[in-house]
Image 1 (cartoon, rainbow, N blue to C red):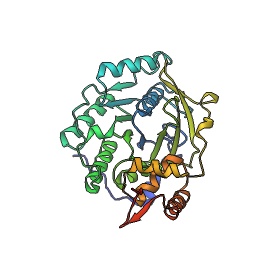
Image 2 (cartoon, rainbow, N blue to C red):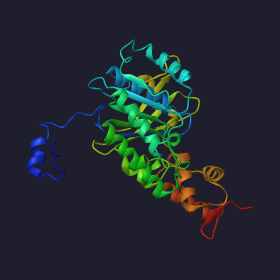
Image 3 (cartoon, rainbow, N blue to C red):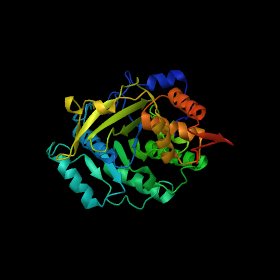
Image 4 (tube, helix red, strand yellow):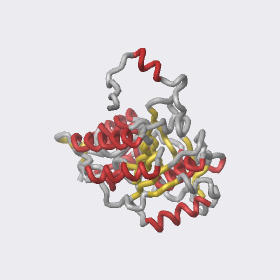
Length: 325
């Protein structure tokens, strides 16, 4: 009978088992650690799924097409819940033209992912079986809200979902790339905390990428990062080619002049913030909406609310702020 290995080990024993050098990230710099969890978020239709599909193909091919170094090819399992399989494969076929057959054998698609929930034991079992069949090193979940039926405003429910993500990661020994939506009102400097759900979701991830688009008319997106194990990265700008469905960095994706941060908050900005946050609204919601609309700092938004009250542009009573009748 095979003897079970002890579960409690001394530091000396652990150091003996430790590799001489730490394993390299699957995607550098620090974007996707081995068996890490990467969250990718942004507003609807900003390009999250396209970007992650680009990343999945790049990982499977072992090539850098997005400006993020990839050391070697990886086996990637895509579990996507929004598009019919035929439509999703058509999208991949367009992207594939830039790579040839380099990713064909290592990019795998769970064609029966839809309808299975991570929050149910049977659903988790399905994804574990799919990961085993694919020998997956990376698992993509697109989007997270279609893979669970929990209340994202319930802290206990979200903590339970996060534990399920950890079980999927640990049992499959794969890294996870999770696409998730963000809250309606987020500040310019929020990244991990901008994702919808309780603080448990912010705590479980190793890396967070937030996509924003300076204008609906532009194919350029800004990527902002938050890493657990790597140094902070400055924002990056990528531009989507609608013919190839690939994002690319470089001069073509330079930050648009129209996206320069605005420091002065005008009266009309405050009025517009009410249109988004509601009338009346709470102080924190009003402040967050001003920050989102003007890309100003928290201090500037607070000063704008104070001035608006002093000038009589807005009224405050019982902890609520409203526009004059």
